[in-house]
Length: 539
Image 1 (spheres, rainbow, N blue to C red):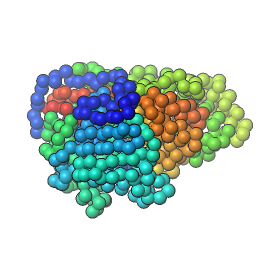
Image 2 (image 1 turned 45 degrees about the horizontal axis):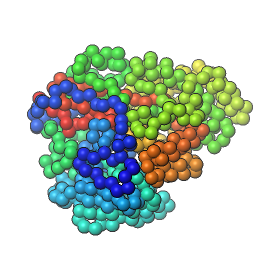
Image 3 (image 1 turned 180 degrees about the vertical axis):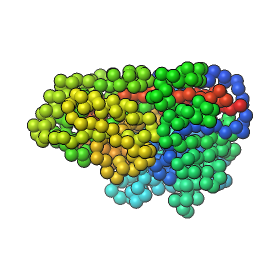
Image 4 (image 1 turned 180 degrees about the horizontal axis):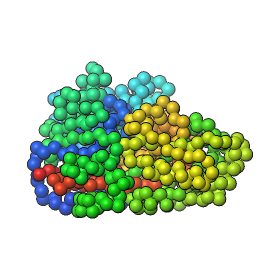
């Protein structure tokens, strides 16, 4: 973002350089179909880890729901460009003091008004240490935020439709993140009973829950269109039912039999056949998704602050044959990683110093492992990689474990958890006994979003408990840079610190591979791999 003063119009891009993405979404090829406006779309999902509160929803299963039932100041189109949603304008003369104006007449689904205070009160609540929200760190660049005590954010309500925000330092791209769910507004009813709200949330987005009890745990959640929503994501259908599956194969079988309209994750067992199974109704396009596995800092022999830990992390990374796995297991629907972000994000570089640890190198891996053994013998300990069975990860985990085992001459294996929620709970409680599958689907199109949430000290999704003053400083300097170019340079420097420490082992970038039934039209997958459900029509 090069302009000192920035206003977001309904079609404005927040800094064109930041939002140039590759891999435009593929539609069904029938944009003229109007469909049945009352028809409900069915799609796949996962049981959310937590109650449905925007600032504490930091995983994909819950995020798909939150993004459907809430509307923030901005949203993102299919290519990742920012468009105003609740906001009328977001402006600043110095990139540090921001003035936010919202549109009049907008309502929550309980009939109450969406006001400036709906945002300021929600943000302050999310930032409180005592409320222990997983997304609280998203507010750490606002003056008054504290990691050590309850915060008093520098937010001031000017009128029912205007508020101001004072940042700790200038940030040219600050508005870009305001489409993330942590920045959603909340109605007054939330503060009356937060637990009850988490089960039956009241939002302001394109969809709403289909009455009390619409969320049947471990089964599905039923959403219907919100007639009061007035914004760029007005649905062309009657609702959305998100079914929670225990395996991707089960979801694919439902799609084949006509019991599921849209599937956004083809299982690896169908990579060779899905284009024949769903001719003209499939997609394979780049998306802002990064995959890895994380080795927690507390794991014996892998403390990243020690020479032994650093050597073992490098050896493990060089022992994974990414080229072979992406070809054999994923049929080239994945691309071996060269960094910690995604090629579809502006600022991406495949030439970062230290990235050679991502290249399979049997001899060097053996050498590094032997050096670590000389410090402290690994013995017959088994190296494990935990994964959730409902996400279609077993094949690649087994392949990675076999690659590590055959290269280093150690025992290595996968460790299965029944579902994503169970795995995340163990990670949150620092109860992992080995490495675990990890990764990131971008919340908004920025290098920062791939780095700070996962590796910044104390960040809500930093389940490996990594901490580096050097990394934290570089990320903060990047977030406060005066231009996108300067910010990206700092983020690249921060990644070079990650290559030294390897808090996670980068694996590959994911394409979104999806299919849909012949009963739906206008199917388009966005920059972050999520279908634009509001655009879908059904006969």
